[in-house]
Length: 350
Image (cartoon, rainbow, N blue to C red):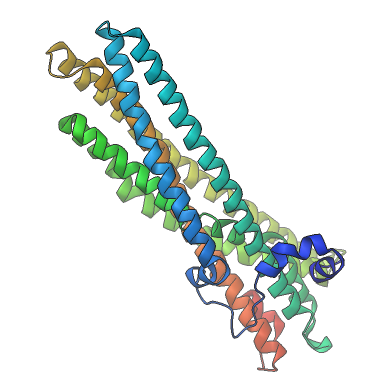
C-alpha cells in the first residue's frame, strides 16, 4: 500500500500529520531549503525558537550556582545555604532538561511532517506521469527519493532555526559570564576555539562534494535495479562499479568527518589545560577563587558541547542544502515531464 492509500484508509494517520503536510507541484515546489522550511513549518519554527530561548537562558545559571557552592564549601560557609544552592542547581537542571524534552519531541514531529510532505509530493508526481513516461529510470529515482533522500531533508527541518538559536544563545551567554568572572581566562578560551573557524568550513566543503556525488550514484543504482533486476552482463558489471564508488564516497566522508572531530577535541582539551594552568596560578596568587576556576572548566564544557552541535548543524545544513537542491530539481523535471515539456525521465538523475 502506498503513502496516499495509507492516508486514505487510516484516519489516525491523516489527522493531524497528513493535513499539516503540504503537497507541492512542480510550479509550487520551493527552490531552496529555506523556502521549503518556510512553507511547511513557519509557525512551528516560531514556537521552537521560543523554547530555544528558554533553554539557553536556563543553561548559564547553574554555573553561578556551582561557583557559589564550591566557594562556600572552601570558606567554611553555612551548610544550610549550600544545601539550598544544591537544590536550586538541581531544579535548574531539571527545568532545562524538561524544556529540551518538549522541544526535541516537537522538533521530531515537525521533521516527520516535512518528510511526509516530500514523499507525498514525489509519489503524486511520479504516479501522475503518462504510462509512456513511467520508465525504470523514473521509478528508480522515485525509490531513491522516497526511501533515502526525503528522510534526512525532512528531519533537518525540525532543527533548522531552533538549533542554531539555542546553541548560539548558550555560547554567547556562557562566554559573557566567563568574561564577567575573569576576562583574561575568557580570552584564552576564545583564542583556542578560533582555529576551528578556519578548518571547519574547508573540511565541510570537501564533504559536500562527496555527498552530492554519492546521491547521484545511488540514484543510478536504484534505476539499474529496476531496469536489470537480475544484474547480469554489462549492466551488472556497471552496477558493481557504482556500488564500489558509493563505498569510496562513504569512506571519504567518514575520514573527513572524524578528522574534523579529532581536531576539535584536541583544541577543547588544550583550552581546558590552559584554563587550569592560568586559573591555578591566579588562585595561588590570590587573584581569583577556586570556584571561579571550577566554573570556567564547566563553562568550557558548556561551550564545547554547543560549539560541536553548531558545527554539526552547519555540516548538516550544507549537506541538506545539497540534497534538497537535487531532489527539488528532480521534482521539477518530473513535473515538466508530466506537462509534456520534452524532458525524458532519464534526465532526472542529473
